[in-house]
Image (cartoon, rainbow, N blue to C red; front, top):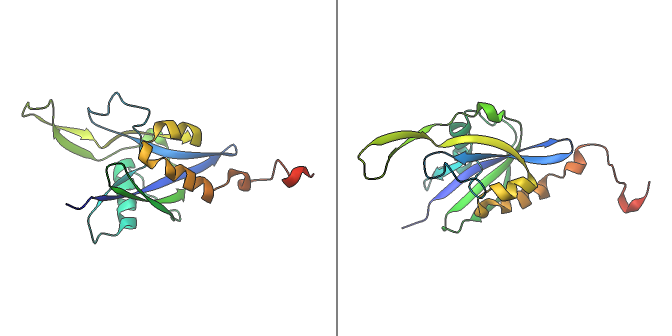
Length: 168
């Protein structure tokens, strides 16, 4: 059986000269008490033949309630410990984490009870510095932070504070 692939968006912004990324926390009872190492970029699975970029845009909207209209810059795909491959694009933008509204999924809960309950796919979103994101993010997605830093240097977003080679 072929492994599924996912596609998502690494939304970033620069605040007070520091690079921040937007991450989401998975909803549902299994993730309720997990924090460090549990967060993710907004993403979702796609089937063979589906456009990964269209999937990334759709999943961001479904998981946050907000569309991404900014230019998307591809990041190298990452193979996860499970074997799944995650394709991601970086986009500069802003979203109010307090307004995140996710789609729902149904699951039997409590287990073997026969009762079906709806849970949000994402229960919250938040902005994190790169250092904090390294703690919060699922380990298999952490290399996206390195790739993002290669694309975006916060020092380039404003006047230089340290001239090169100590000159100045």
